[in-house]
Amino acid sequence: MRWKIETLTFDLVDDICLGVQSGTITEADLPPINADGLGPLLELRHTQPNILNRDGGALWLTADNYRELMRNMRDTDAWFEPRSGYQGFVSVDSLRRDELAWTDFVLRAKRAAISAGFSDDYGGKLTAAIGEFYANVIDHSGRIDSGYVVFSASPGRFEFVVADAGMGVLNSLRSNPTYAHLIDAGTALELALDEGVSRYYTEQGHGFGFRPLFVGLANISRYIRFRTDDHSRSLTRKADGSIDAQTSQLATTNGFFCCVVCDVEIQTPAGHPDRTPKDAERA
Image (spheres, rainbow, N blue to C red):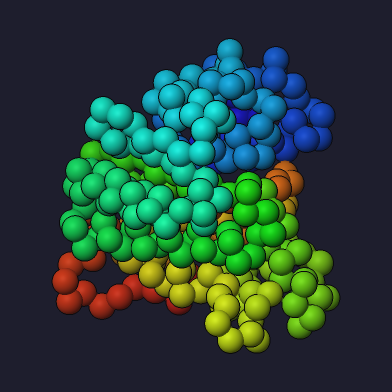
């Protein structure tokens, strides 16, 4: 374990989850940690829900910025921070059942992005990306009832998470006879992201994996992390605009988890050639 880290990062989440699943550590072994980012906190909640209490924290974890959000995620189907609207979440099942719920979510999330410093155009791109992700939960997870969408905005930054506790990318692809031979979740994740395949690949009218969404996000995100089964794939934008991609084997998690972090400075100027994930090298 990396004991000297005081901020909850994705790397620390990886260590905690692997240690807890392997039995090499217990909650009592964990040092004081502060959660100042949405993604790592929700991934910890997604992978090891029993390690957090109903308020989203524990004696070793401080999550003051997200305590109200975490409490409402447990108790309700939708919630938006009532004072400034900088945080919010809604269940995918609510979005599926009520068309107005999606309209309301889009308006709130876009308003939060613009307040954080993003342009109206990029606010629209962010909410469109969220919509594509939640549609994938409906099409591919097999557990619509477990899906949720969350956003959090702060000056210069907008972060969102879409996740579910469904079948995961590997089992989803294996339901397509073309990919029934797959045994590795990392390979399945790379196929879904880089090649755009899905369990409906040959059926007209269904999604073609995450590739189109992946390309669109490349121009507006600082960091993207996908997590499914026992693998993750992370994409980090470098200073020159290229994308560094890494696939890693981690502790096992249920379903699918995605976190996208966007910074105002990433906004591509008008007329700038699109940068796509073709710049990313497979790790």
